[in-house]
Length: 249
Image (tube, rainbow, N blue to C red; front, side, top):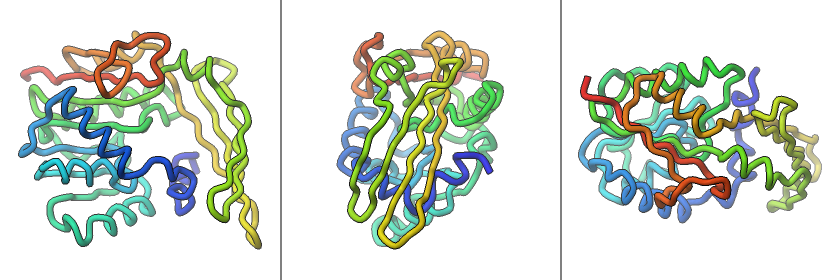
């Protein structure tokens, strides 16, 4: 089992409580100002998790929303979130992000909160980008929110301890020997329960590497930003936001 098949289970929401609806509302307001996605055209949140951004988009009037994720636990959490609010206007699918079951369908595709770089080989990340390109309509927009490699390496916190309700969590972070992946191990302790360990491993790209992957996948007009607000990208940017457009054909 790969790390991403086991990390996004029932404990995930408890381990990331700061990734909440208020943050998602701010993210969505920023990305609307940045790329102006059409509200009445199909939009896909790829790696949607528990649906925070989908709910925020619904609140902003987006009428045709789809979320794809591999984790059934997170999709179930999203379905429960939408049950009383938007039971028919948000569609959830369990799929691998490399195999998006649409062609020339979406006007906008989002990949939020570091849902990119999970796979062992660069070729598999490239495969995911080709699937995104295929699923977009001509002139459609893809927004990719990922890590700034240089900032992540320079500001890495190797060890951290957190208490999250009944959970005591020890976090160990490191950079792979090749310098291209950030590795995280979380050991979770809960009274009267066995210790649980989760691992994350995310590939980090240099700006020109990412730009080249997007161009090779078929995208036009690739722009890089340092945040969802559209700030200039530089070495001190915490994030790397790529906005890429599919061409007319």
